[in-house]
Length: 238
Image 1: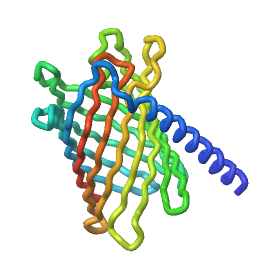
Image 2: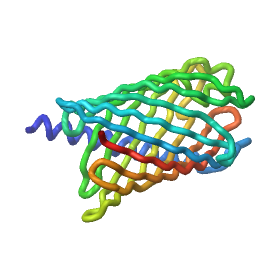
Image 3: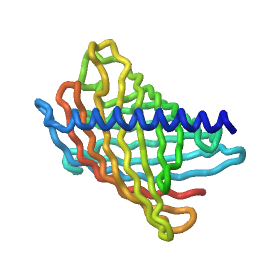
């Protein structure tokens, strides 16, 4: 029990550390960047989940994105993933994503991406806090803007807080996520910050509707983009 308590305390310290780091980065990235462009996008998501025995879950996601004020096709993505609960507060996951993406010349290209996640969870009062560390390899928009950036290995760090409104079918969540690429470029720290807030409504015990708003800021890259994104999702447990 002492070891478990010590692990929980260490995880709490790490969560607080990352929250402070991301909040500090958020303050630094709120100013308008030189040459920054603006865009409004819309994303549509369909999520299917299947729980298996021994704490293993499988999931599939189909996502459609539109850019350029939501008037232009951006990409279609299909993701399959699996995750395993090592303990109540620790989860491991891995997945693969296939993409059909439109480039700046409106030419369609096939892409792929692999990822591995480690997620720690910690209940705090009525809130559920989590820290997800993701290592991904493959397609990334930011690298397409820089001829010198050929490495597609990225670390992503996300801190998330969620809250279920007692006695209702509603819940809300908020998160902040940073992208840290492994490149040979000097002084390369985080080059993308994503702020997200949304709500979910349970239709029944298996299905859920969701809506969220994302503010995504690029920096330390050429032609940085600030995206305002509205996401509509439907989730179903098989």
